[in-house]
Structure formats: structure tokens, C-alpha cells
Length: 196
Image 1 (cartoon, rainbow, N blue to C red):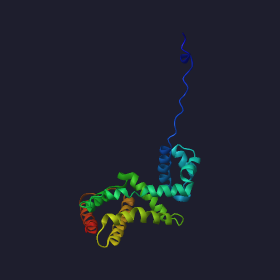
Image 2 (spheres, one colour):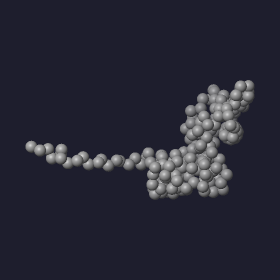
Image 3 (cartoon, helix red, strand yellow):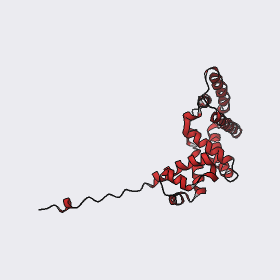
Image 4 (tube, helix red, strand yellow):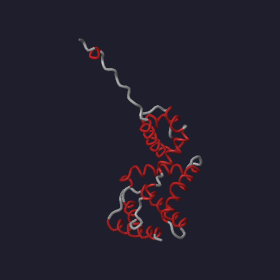
């Protein structure tokens, strides 16, 4: 008896869409475009093309460019990283990270470039301010704790941001005696702000 199934070619199996993966790809592409071109210079069709997605999906997943920008902003400031800081070695750990070259940490520097562009645009600065208060300063305040936590948290955040800017414009990692002095002095300063 002939096996009917053997005579019928296999049907191609439809590939299941992975909405989470598509959404993540769009978000990753958006952060790169917003960092490079700012809000006004980033175009949805280019973001979608880099993500390998249809531009209509940006509206579906994020509600348009404003929603995509807000989601990218939120994803660029990750408060969970703050809770992983080691209080005993915080100052030195941050100082060593900042002594390195920015390109040794591409993802973080892309995120920071994006935040800098958001800060300089009147359209996006209010969104950045809200995100920084809720996702950066607030968690630092809670992590530092103790007396004068709001003031100490603000100083830590200001120094951290200033060091990121300096590292971003520096062409190479610090070396030799300058590196040692930088780590020692910066580490001592930051450590003094987190000790209760």
C-alpha cells in the first residue's frame, strides 16, 4: 500500500514571530540612532531597518517615536546595577573603570552618549530629568542611606557623570603614574561619600 504522506511534499513550517526579540532589536537599534543623531535626527524607518523589522511595529510596540524614545531612555538607565555595587570597594571600583578607555565599554558609552543628547534637547530634557530622578538619583540615595543621603547621592551622581564625560572625550586609557594617582584620589573621594 502506498504511503500517501510520502507523496505529498512537506509543507514549510511557518516561523513563529518572536515579539520580545523584535521589540528588543528595535530598542537596541533606537538607542544607537538616538545616541548618534539625537531625537530629531533619528528616523523610524532607519531604526526599523537596522532592527530587521517593519517600521509599523514601532507603533505597535511603542506607540510611535515618543514612546520609543521614552523606552530607550528608561532602558539606558538601569537602577538594578546600583544595588550590585560593593560598598567597601565602591570608590576604587568606579575610579578604575573611569581610568580605562571609553571604547572598552561600548554599550555603556553608547547609553551615555544617548543621555547626553537627550539632556541638550529642549524636547527631551524633561523626559531625561524624570528618568534620572526615578532611575538614577533615587536608587543611589536609597543605596547610600544614612545622614544627608540626598546631598551625598547628588554629589556622587555629579562626579560620576563628570567622569563619564571626561572618559568619553579622552582618546586613550590613563597610564603609569597618572593612572595610579587618578585611581587613588578619585577612589578616596568617592568612597568618602558612600561611607556612613
